[in-house]
Image 1 (cartoon, helix red, strand yellow):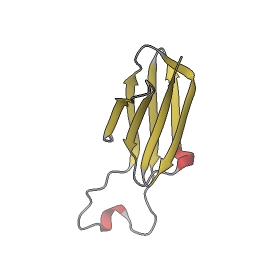
Image 2: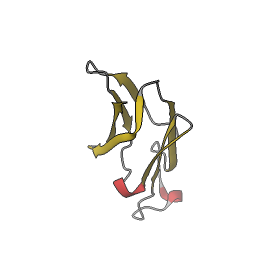
Image 3: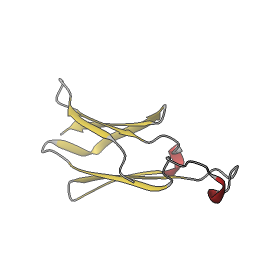
Image 4: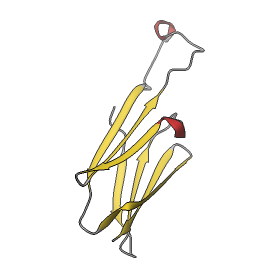
Length: 96
């Protein structure tokens, strides 16, 4: 599943990534940087209250979700912070 995302440069020169991750818990999110690629993955788990075969309609996707972003020049890969707020993952990327 490919979640919706925004990636923007802020007026102070830092960067912000916003990724919609409703239903994903903080402990199920993984953020890595490798070869100038920011990778964000998570797992939206099924709730045990209803069996998969008992749905009349199922539009919500479950399982692994992942996005990858090529980082612009000037990002300090050691100064990346993230927080999950109301189902949206907010990642702040500092300048070198």
